[in-house]
Length: 220
Image (tube, rainbow, N blue to C red; front, side, top):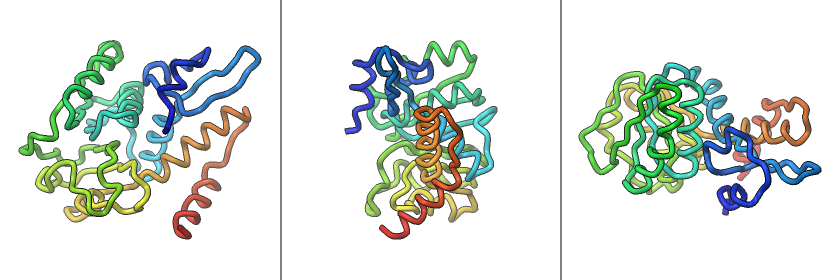
């Protein structure tokens, strides 16, 4: 759980964007069978625009994590024409697999994609960089940072996909030096709204869903 990659391998038709990601999170049943979509990248991009007033287009993006969520984020960054994409991960085999899978798309878009290990701790993000955390590290309040605090010593923009807890240690570290940070609740809302649009073939009010999500978290 979730079965995003298992579903990808057994349904009859895949949306082109989901094909690049290699996973689906939304299934629509048609007469000929299921069509699979992935709305994670869409949700992330709209969350970043909404919460950080930042476009992926022409942004120098630094992605933390190369798992399933990281893969969707990386594909969306390339589709949206970021200026450069740097991916950090601890497991180098998984990182190299992702870099290899992204190579055709990065070449087609003429975008440089760089891999870095989180074990090398001498890196500092440049000022105003867009950092996206797709790693699960931070779900627990006692979790360490994925990189040392010194890596976040300049003001950056951080989009942390984690939404519970609503403020992570990583967000607090970024804000302490004057950076901007947002959690992933808006991503959850926008990817859910997109899924409802796919199912219903009609526009869905994401602001109503956002209010409901905030209320639910406040009551949890």
